[in-house]
Image (cartoon, rainbow, N blue to C red; front, top):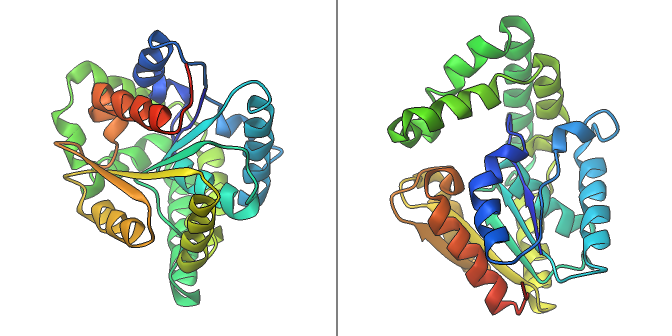
Length: 254
């Protein structure tokens, strides 16, 4: 079965096109709402522990593929850091950061998260998302069909500004382990037999560079042709095929 983790300002609905295809192929799919866990899991450590509990529960009945996009990918990676014996057959990290390179990087990430949180509280969600959607990271999403862009916008603006601000402060990259520690933990999981795949859109230069670091650390890497930062949104058919391929190679049966 699959456990899919969504990104910042997303809901489980972001995974629906992919999840539908996985279910049509016979797989069970669990897509937790991470923001529903915010009141009790205001820290990254707490959220990772909840994800570990969910994965462990699912693994009692089936082999598990854990996949996460962006923030969800960071949560998946950090969960492996905190829970090295996590009972997963495979992990797929989509456009996910590995944490700060050093203490100076951690401080810079903390300052950025604080700035974004303040902007949310001061301006509100809609003005924040007006700005957010202009970031180069999301430029490729302008070519999505209008109905898809409208759905993404509705999803992003459905949140309370305080909830998004708290997630930036509590779950941001500044709380991840150092990049070297994260990559080392992923390497140990690989040595224990866990299949590890890093996925980036071919048009996302920033995260293609992180894919190179993942490859150097021994992870399998995939560049989704013609996609930007959110490959599963922009190329859901290809992404679902990729997940099924990972499951097959890890001998996760439908």
